[in-house]
Length: 187
Image (cartoon, rainbow, N blue to C red):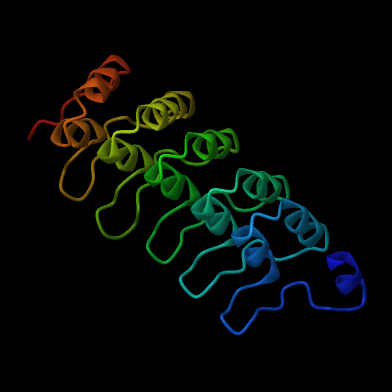
């Protein structure tokens, strides 16, 4: 049906009154089939909703791995920032979705990227705050494999290690130390 509508001349990047494109709506609804039809029709992967979300952010936020994969396969910018300075990797880490985290890391998402504003959190810091061990482990592996620092600090001088300890996740702190993280001098 969607293919027929596009072939009849419907604009692939049309937005509804709320500002959502068809690609974003497909991601909100978890329809990887529609995502594939729209990306094959050259839907704009960089188009943003009013809060800066791209379709990749929507797929990550709604936790639809199949949509996320389809977008990545179509070339969606993996490190795009929303208006709050979050990447899809940061969103996935914050929701403890290790499957999405691993998919994004496989797509070479920048595990060391900081939010440009606010706390300047990384995905690893967000996962350490929550304490989701599988997500933290995946991000640690990704950091080591991609050469990102485990000792990056937020705007308060806190590293992922400090955040894990402050939130009572001592088991994760031990794993961070074993992976090579060090305690910042002021903590």
